[in-house]
Length: 550
Image (cartoon, rainbow, N blue to C red; front, side, top):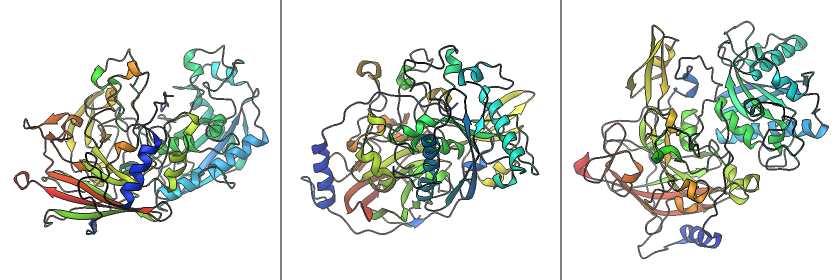
């Protein structure tokens, strides 16, 4: 179950201080060092990878898990689910249509518009909103019924889809865009409130805690569903209360949570740490409260745009790479505008980039405009931290290595890492042999508790996202503008010694090592940033290398 945690907002450093940095970073030298924008070369883009998250069709335990296509035109089956004690109002249904993009939305982006822009027009979502499916009982009565499957909402998924199939007189092939015998995705938008937004009149008071918590937002799969090319069956679905569409806008149409859950349907994991705050967890306290992305991401706190790794994994972005014959120091420029984004992949000197599913340093220019702008200017839900509201460089450590699994006589066995991995290998996956992304931002779900899938590095080299004082301060420490790299002393440079504390391994001389044991020979320095919100930004970076490490 993909469940969000409501977390406490910790205050930021004063706005005026960061506003000064924002203006300075865009307008000229700002320190004793001579920071200025240096015209550089544009690096070549990597060859497009055909391997995306859609190719990972099985989970770690070997269950088939159909993933929604991330490119092309993808149909969405949307079924409003009505409980008798919470009939949909006209405003509810209007809010639903605006959130999905079937009516004009005056609050932020609809689901359809968000993914069109985030994917650089590579993904076109086509929602079809069905007539209301009436359950015929109250929400509490429904959830208290004995389930015939692993969870009660799976019963409802099957019932609602069969009702639609019968009444539409359709074989539902129009909802199977990749021809795998499964409906690409089903959205069940239910009429009762989510369990954390209810008032004193609790409609779920007679339910167990587990039953009550089902009234939330999550993505799930019907793992027992069988492929049928002639009449596709449901498997992937999103279960979400109509109340979530009011989180950021009292007039409805808020698609934040809807967009986050769609990320899961596309194969993206949560980037927050599910173990966080769980004092009963068996996870080492050093990693239990770790928040590797600092909250500010669509797959973390439901805010802003998807990051460059997510876009690469979905096939929307080919990063730029350094030629083997490059000479150093090397001045390069990265751009971020309405029409596209450039991100830089830096691997160890012993590897070359083939696809997103390996280990490397990822560098992207953050743009506070476009999909990031609303959440950079307002606090989502009124208490979440603001997104970064100045441009700057984001640097991540990515460990997206893929591991082989096999089922032998009923026992699941982990085998070797495949690095690089190619599509032909995954095409042969079955319930006997399959491959998965081995790392997670949740320690208890990762190959090793101190290995993370995606880790945002903090520009000053001081590690705070480990949240070692989580209980003392009453919640996590989130990222803020000072997390970004920009032309300022102490904020402009990335190199292996300064950031050794962010990595699990080192070479004994104070330099970090990748989790696979390889070195990182490069140093980066931000020279300057220029541009504006309307047209986008570009950033100048100087890359150098220690020849002895090549």
